[in-house]
Image 1 (cartoon, rainbow, N blue to C red):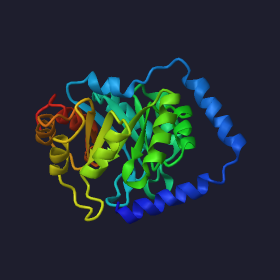
Image 2 (cartoon, one colour; image 1 turned 45 degrees about the vertical axis):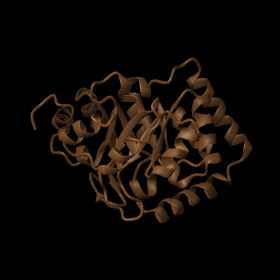
Image 3 (cartoon, helix red, strand yellow; image 1 turned 45 degrees about the horizontal axis):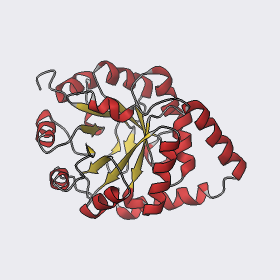
Image 4 (spheres, helix red, strand yellow; image 1 turned 30 degrees about the vertical axis):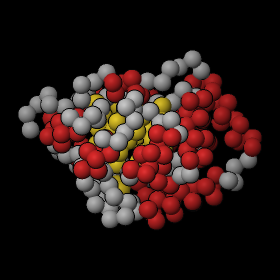
Length: 264
């Protein structure tokens, strides 16, 4: 996923969402407020409750990896992740490039108790409210494709409906932006958006400059228990892992191995 690809997709989202009428927007906002009334955010709490917090991801394919499990059932995968001890689950809802949907999110939320992250290209508050009414406990905010003003609107919308927001960064500049907008849950994506190469050293380098109060999440390229131990030593509290688990013949066992509960 290159910078150009990210910008193209997010600009497309902006155009589509700009066509929504005020009544549609307000109706969804009210539904989200009603559904989330009195609920406390629980995504971060679940991450902090595990010695090794894995955010296990469901995705059928990606622009960089191609088809992974094109016909995978998100509910079956969620059940394996839950019994395997995942702290939370990430669900891709982007349809065109990842073959996901809000229906996947809703179905998983109806069948499993894991806190769910809506992973998509969010550019508008409306998408946060969509996440809330379909069972998410958190949303992804990708700074590389957003202005600070846009990111703040997403964070405010998430707070309004009691969702956590995972603010994703790729560079030191984005990390500083995340700190400046008050992000306290920060994901460091190890994929370079220019070269598309994955390097765990990105997480190691940015951890040294991260806000002291931030809960850090490492994303992309995590394959072994040793990768996790290395990043835990640098201060990471959680690990978003998708392709490794989705390609595993036995995702339950793979998840337990990553947590150090079974030998690799």
